[in-house]
Length: 129
Image (cartoon, rainbow, N blue to C red):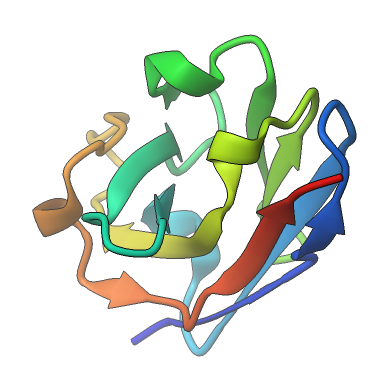
């Protein structure tokens, strides 16, 4: 099974940028569709962005479209989330998640929490001046 470790979180000012990384190990990274989720204090964990196993298809929640970019490097077993023009409402713990797929025919992205079996421990992102 895959293990996931997020990094890159921290304190950033409104309007600033941050890049999150998620390093995968223990399995073949390119067999997994991947996603980013976030959870703010007192709120449910919510979907942020997803990417299929090949990187050719992506999907975003409306609130981050045009500001965040999800990408992956299958040669480096790493998932990324580039966050630009961040807002205070982006403050949350960010989690990466993995969903095992069959790469011969499954090019779909996954946007539901229940689709993902494997999760990282999360990294805190705080947007504040």
